[in-house]
Image (tube, rainbow over all chains, first blue to last red):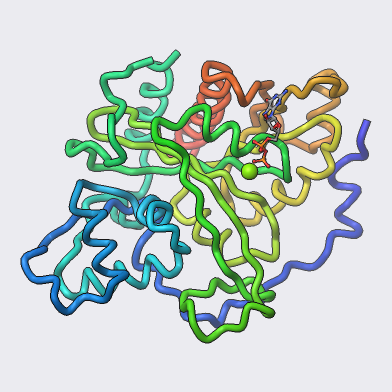
Length: 118
Length: 199
Ligand SMILES: Nc1nc2c(ncn2[C@@H]2O[C@H](COP(=O)(O)OP(=O)(O)O)[C@@H](O)[C@H]2O)c(=O)[nH]1
Ligand SMILES: [Mg+2]
């Protein structure tokens, strides 16, 4: 048997807290759902933003999915999305942190949905 | 399987208004990618984040020399659980130096499923400590690997130093029903904790 977890407390390395000062843009959660709000004029958009608009034109996707499909880091995707939200091209549908805090009803719905799969 | 709900393309159904996430965490080769792939209705997606050695995310592709960065990968999948609701599963390594990624993952997460392997339980300790620091509730799923030793649950609980109420389940990440049951154990635990907080 392996040794107990808390024996390790004596030698547990100190918490690394580096990187806190970095200005992160936590406007979106990884699962915030994004949809196109306006796509009539895309002429001023960079090639990367064009790609975001093209992808999102098909329907709703989470921030993480947009990053995955475009093969971009989430951090970079968030920057592109926040610009596109500012310019009115993209908007959020759901999942904004704080607005959709998980409550009892959501947990129950998750449980029901999982049980329905068995 | 409730195939009616499953999207036949990459997009989230029009009726969905709520998106939630659960983390699937554990050390290298414990079965995270397998678990996410087994349950996801979409082909699992993958992202790589560049981070500075100090653990900060790099959100500008230019300006930071490759030498001082490292990459961390996560994969994720999606389950449409009702007309209104999608659940995302994020498989991620629990490495302390990836502070910012860990923060992003934990933010708003319902909870976490810790995958563990009886051949190297001690490699799960770090991620469990990190979840506790983030106040994220979790369940532990022992993935059954061929040739891995088996122990009575009481011994596993003691080795992992689990609270009495923390669920401990056994699972095969290659099996949809088994993996679903592991998530159900976690969500039931989250609901129980919720009831306690409201009482
Ligand atoms: N026997 C068994 N093998 C598994 C299980 N889950 C994953 N594996 C295998 O273990 C290996 C590593 O799994 P992977 O999902 O890549 O681990 P990750 O590094 O945590 O993402 C793969 O060859 C899987 O097929 C399980 O529950 N039982
Ligand atoms: Mg993996």
